[in-house]
Image 1 (cartoon, rainbow, N blue to C red):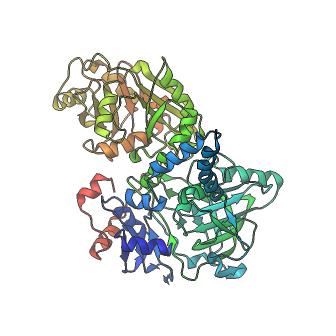
Image 2 (spheres, one colour):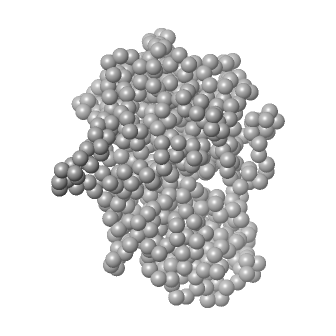
Image 3 (tube, helix red, strand yellow):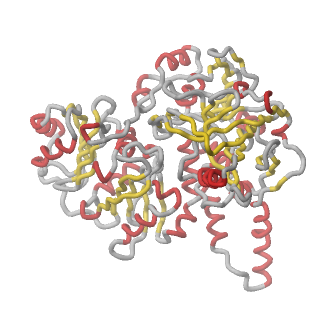
Length: 603
C-alpha cells in the first residue's frame, strides 16, 4: 500500500489531507464529495481523530483507492478489456498440433503457475506488530462512522477470509463489519454469500468458525474479494492471474487461515454460530439504509499489523462512488465468462446509477423468436447475475452501451408491452422494494427487434399534460416528458402520495391517447429534471410484480411504499450528508462544493 500511494503521489492521483479529520462522518463525507468530482483523486488523511473518544490515531486513512478509470487501470496493471481477452484466449486454448505450436504454448502454461497462491513459512510484514488476548483494542484503528443514522463505526474495506469446515476451500469476501466493542465485530455476510455457506457448516457441526480480516496491502486484493467467482474458487487465484505473480500468504497467528503477507492490518478471531447480535442500520451502496437485523459476531483473538500501517476504507451511498470503477473492472473482465452461459451475448453494461444489480443493459445477436427471453432466464440463473432486477436486451445494431442518450433512444423506439417479461426470483438481501426479503419481481425488456410502428397518438406539451393530470388528481405536483422524439416518450410525474398509486393509474387510463410510459415518483425527494438520479430512484424502488402495469400503456410506481400499498415491511430512508459537517469541511478547505453538486447527486 505504501508503494502504491507513493506512485499515486508521483503521478498526480493522490491528494494528502494534513488537517485533522474526524472518523465520525468527516472523513467519509469528504471522500463522498470528492469521488463525485470528474477529476476525483485518492485521499490520504494523515491525521485522523476521534473527538468523541479523545483519540489521535497513529495511522493514516486512505479513501477512494479506486478513484477513477485511470487509477483503476493502474491497479490492474492494464486495461480490464486486455485481461478479458487473456481469459478468453485461455478458454479457447486448443491442444497443439505440432512442435512449434507446443513451443508457443509454453509461455502461457508457464504463466499459469502464478495463479496459485504461495504459502510462506516465515511471518509476514503484516505481523511485525502482534497483539493478542487482553492487548486487543479495536479502538486503536481509525474505524469510520459513515452516516448519521449508522448503528456505529464500520470496517468497510475488510478482506474477510474464511474456510470450509473440512479445510478444503478458502474464500475471500468483502463484507462490512460493525465494531461493537474493543474486541467484537458484527459479520454482515448475507445469506447468499460463500462465507455464509461455510458458517452453516460450522453451525451444523456445533463448532466455532475461524475468521481473519485483512485491511490494506495490494489494492487488488479487495477487488478480488467482490469478484463474482463460482462457489469454491478462491478469489486469490484471480489475483495471481491478473497480477502475473502469485499472492504471497502467511498463516494467521491464532487460526489456520492464510492471508496476504503484505496486508497493513490483520484482525483474527472466531465466530460462535449460536450467537447473533443486532447489526446496523448502515447506509449502503444502494443509497439507502439497510435496517437492523441479527448477524453473527466475531470475537477478536489477535490484531497484527505492519510497523507503519495505512487504514483503507470506503464510503458507500448514492452514486457515483468508487464502486463505479470497481464494478467497471468486474464487468469488463467477466464478459468472457458470462458468454459461456450466453454465447450470443455481444456486450453488457451495469450503469452505476442502476446500482449494478438493479439494472443491466445487454447487446446480443438473436437467431430465433424468444431468444432474448431465453437470455433473460439464463442471466437470472447465473451466480450473482441472479440478483439483477431489471434487464434490457438490445440487438447487435444497438449503440455502445455507455452512450446513454443513444441507448435510451434505441430502447424507447422498441419498447412493446408484448415483449415485456415479468417474473419472480431471488433478489439481493439489500433490496427494500419487494414485499418480502430475498424474493421479488424481475423485469425483462426485449428490445432486440425493429422499431415499433406507432408512437403517441395525440402528443401534448408538458404544460397541457400537467393540467390534464392535475384535473384528475391534485396530488400531481409537476411532470416532465423525456424522449418525446421517440415512439415511447417517458412521462415522469412528481406526486404527493395520499392514496395508493395504483388507484391513480386507474384514473389516468383515460389519457391513453397522450401517453406511452408513465413513471411516478414522490414529489418531496425527487427532481423530475434530474434523469441520472431518477434512474437511481426508480431502479431501487420498484418491484415489477407489484409496481408495473402494461395496459393500456406502461405505468411504473416508483414511490416509497407504505400501508397504502399493502407494504408491511419498514421502508428505509436514503442516506443524506450532515449539512453542518459538509460546511465545516468546506470552511477548512478539505472539500469544495456548490449547491449544484448537492442537488445533482441528492447529497
